[in-house]
Length: 120
Image (cartoon, rainbow, N blue to C red; front, side):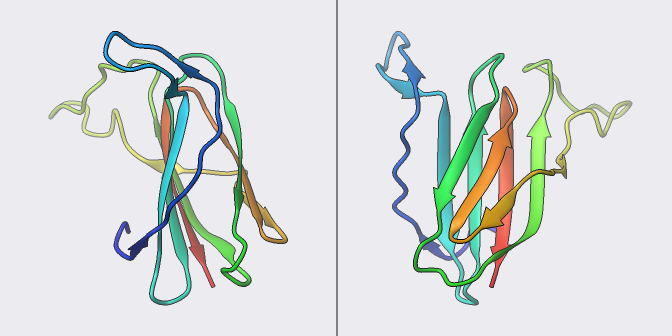
């Protein structure tokens, strides 16, 4: 779902410092514009305990609607899938992503990765 023209997105969120980098944002977002007029966004929340409210300006893309919203998260960051527990860490249907006018709004749960596909 990440094929298309890469979007140059600007992100303004609080951050934290690490041993190797300063000002790492708690949230980040990437996206592509699709040839069919749709947009796919990929968002991550790196915060351990805080959900992050996100607003994405969709100006210039025309009328879009949420076609699919997938969320991957787990309380244990070291959780894995095994032969005995093949669905321990899997994407689940997301909810709460809405478009009003030319603005997408959604909430990123702590330690989560999301994919939001928007169709024309």
